[in-house]
Every structure is written in structure tokens, then in C-alpha cells.
Length: 82
Image (cartoon, rainbow, N blue to C red; front, side, top):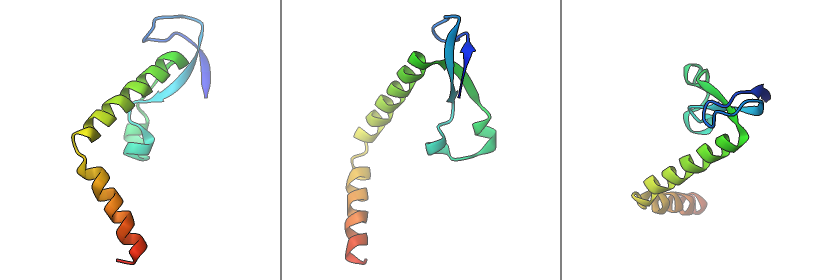
């Protein structure tokens, strides 16, 4: 979904804007209260925000390698019938 307007991040007018969910649906689910919180921003700003969020998520995961090891172990156990 898009509309034309003003991007509050880069301050440009007349751009096509995209709807950015402040609380990512694939992380926080369909919680109606959280999903109502959106902002309309241009595609370039939207992409930059998503890239930065991914970078920060990866930084958190680097500090918790047990998540990767545990996930692999779960899949191995599942395939062995445990």
C-alpha cells in the first residue's frame, strides 16, 4: 500500500510513501494495539530503517551464539525422532 505525501524522516514532499509498522508483524504478531502503530515514510527511508533494524538484530544474535547452536540441535533432534 502506498500514497503520495511528505516523509517525516527525510523531510521531502511529493514522494510515494509506504506504510511502516513500528512493531514488526513477523516479530510481534497480529496484536491489534501494536499493529495500529504505523508511520508513512518514503521507500528509501523505509529500506534504510529495515536495514538498520536487521543490523541491530544481528548484533544481538552475535552476543547469543547459543540461539544458533540450540536451533540446530532442535532440528537434529526433531529429525531423529526425539
